[in-house]
Length: 411
Image (tube, rainbow, N blue to C red; front, side, top):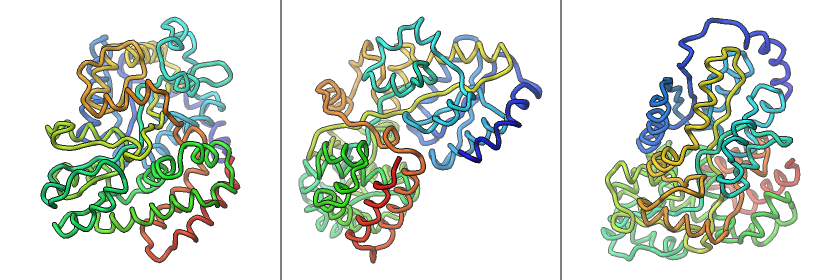
């Protein structure tokens, strides 16, 4: 926050200065660079270009932990883009509070976003002090275990239906030369895997007590101890998963080199690009097949304040285009996520997406940690889980103690 405040004085002057490109060129920054992600974002670009404007792609590889600081630095440093992606939650909170993001309330009111966006928490997540500052574009869920049919067929064991069966099948997979669990070595992946294990192993209420209520006693208690035991199993199953990026880990599952991967529903985009069919080539287990729930998070686009009126007009067009029903379907079918609009036709949804839609309809959902924790808390958790998953000598008990300390100081 101190760094942000220090940059603001200079940024206000810079926002009004400098040369500009064509009035209808609009740079859009994001971190969607995998095959499935690129195919999905191309749908946004195509729809926006069809309005007579021009999407200038500003993708940064490496995921949110790499791209997000760059985006923030540009905005606070007076070099704002036309639109930028952040995850739903508190990631752009300080930028909004600093007055650097556009108020989209007029557009939201005109197009009745509050009536068509569901669940309502996604709309609320874009609202600060009654004003709308972002466009939620999808519903993403972390709570999935993706399974390679080929890997289990080669190992001579049935495709698991839950986490316990998956763990039990690991010796057969290893004997067949397979990696039981594909896991990239980036902080957000290890933290994400742990956060999937919490509601699956310890239940929804424990998850909420830890991340919503920041209950340190629960974080240090027996239910979370079970989760750390499962995480210990997971790191052993992933010991030979020597890849970095999430989509590289997904590719291990697609090619049958690994049995499974804990990853969000965006992994579906990679299976689709590879020409694989849900239920035939791969399976998906929401809630790890233990507790069929999904987290309700996703991606949203914010629009930094610009001095050029033509670009500001193009921002409004882009915001409207992203929530257009046809654009929502085209984008989300390729992204693997679920549209935020509740009034679109999803007849083309595959088996895995239909599972997610049913869970959503049943209301068995939880909020994503970024909606409940500050970035500081999330970064502390990231550091802990990178160390835990890469350091076999760190016991689950020691890791849980540190985990409880982080939760105790969370804000």
